[in-house]
Length: 85
Image (tube, rainbow, N blue to C red; front, side, top):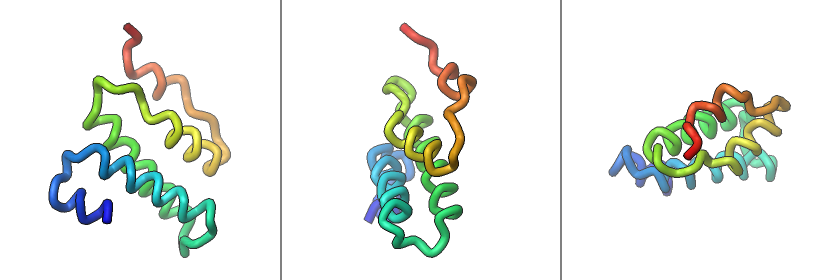
C-alpha cells in the first residue's frame, strides 16, 4: 500500500515513513526473506522522509530501530546535519 502511494506521489513523506515502519516490522516479526534488504530499504525510505520534510525533526524512532537492527549507533554527523534552533 505504501509503495503504491509512493508510486503515485514520490514526494509524499508520510508514505515513505509508513513504508520504513512496515519494512522494520517485517524484520521484528520475522516475516521477511531478507532482513538485510529490508534494513537497506527502510534506511532509504527514512532518508527520503528526512529529505522531504526538512523542517521536521528527524524520524528518531526509525533511525533508532535501524541502528539497533544494524547493531550500530547513530552517528553524530547524521544528527548534526539539522541545525538547532
